Image (cartoon, rainbow over all chains, first blue to last red):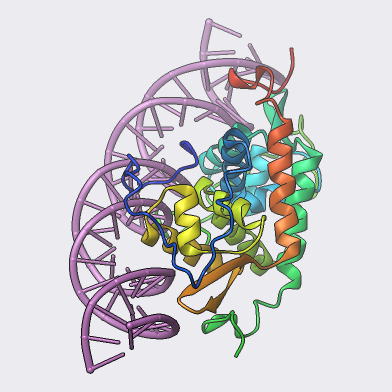
Length: 143
Length: 143
DNA sequence: TCAACACTTGAACAACTCTGCAACTGTTGT
DNA sequence: ACAACAGTTGCAGAGTTGTTCAAGTGTTGA
């Protein structure tokens, strides 16, 4: 799961076809290169993708209140045990949660405080934004 | 694209089957409820999903250096114009970027500083993490 | 040693995503 | 008005993802 953070579609990227716009009316800024390391970019994308699912985000929100075992999470979210297990597998593969065995149970907990904060900042941001004003029709470039 | 932040799989969630673990050996904590507003959860997930793709994240990284028109972005990333346009459409639908027409060109720019910071914090975090120590084999619960 | 519990994992499938092509909409310069 | 440029959009196909079922792995208590 979560392949290389580059989604479906056709695989092999094509050749740079045209010469790109270079008309006088639009003096193009210097061609800004990637800037960010490809590996970090990919790693960040994978993390975002992992939390880019309500179900998984819900689990993180739940764990933010303290660790919990799979069964507890399943009960709290009214979901199948295996479903939760799979979701946790994804989160774990991105190191967003860690697990620890305790007898028959396996407790999961949020791992990285850095990431956790990021997630909740976004959550807070999402709560603030009323859904955006005109946005729903065609936003941007105000008249 | 980007449906309701709840991915593929079968659509209708099933009935809460069993009574959940309630053995004596594991005194379950009080059943912690959702806590976070469902709408915010969904909104946050959509945002994360939008940036959860290297290609789109790359565009954001590029725009962090200043606005750019579609052609410039396409040139910088060696991609088809329509491909970039589609990616920008996704980013725009989550209000991560805004556009502004300038003659024949349409310039795109990052919209929300709040979000922008979040993205780059994650990017920074991803750069720090060397990829995780043992992680690659089965991490967690140290021996 | 065994049954029961708590999970994990592999496979299958339906649903969703991304990309590129072709066709179409806007702007500008002539 | 027209050609050319800059972007957008509809569509199809290949690929990916999430959920569930069934079967497998660990642990514990009897």
